Amino acid sequence: MSRRPELKGRAARLARLLPAAPGNQAARTPFVLLVVLLLGGGLIGLLVLNSALSEGSFQLDDLQKDTKSLTDEQQALQHDIDAYSAPQALQRRARELGMVPGGDPAFLDSDGTVKGVPSAAALQSAARVPLVLRPPETAARATPSATPSASTPAAVAAPPAHPASGAPAAIPTAPVPTTTPGR
Image 1 (cartoon, rainbow, N blue to C red):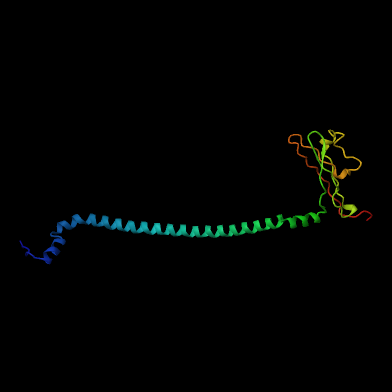
Image 2: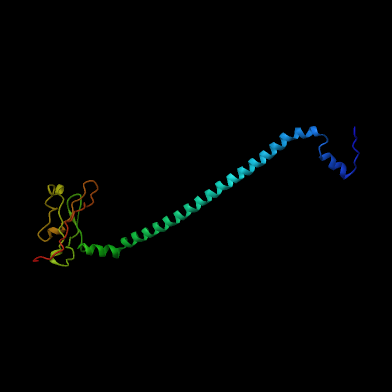
């Protein structure tokens, strides 16, 4: 039997770190393999997590670009709506359709009295007089006080009152011809 020499100081501490017998080596092998497998699995897990985060970052960037383009498109459409809704644009389009500014309206109270003095719309030419028709359901209910007088033109007769609210009902208008008579 060989006896190991006794070591002192730093050498003794290093000797304790080294295995004393070959039998101890076999007991440490499963532990070392377990540690290597855990480190390798952790490294692979970090790699998979990093690639998933990168993919999510790319998707987020694409969605932000889509959001910016859709926001720009929405703003452009809102600008178009505002341009078409401007009073000058509405007036120009109404004139293109042959419409003229209306005159003073007259209203009927719930008791049948006429409020206001109706006036004809400003006429640009004789061919562009708008034709105002009374709705068929109110023609049968017309009262003598609601019918236009000889001084009131039939084209601007007061609209009948709405039965529920007492507010004047809308009168549909016929399309205005765009050609002048005699052609």
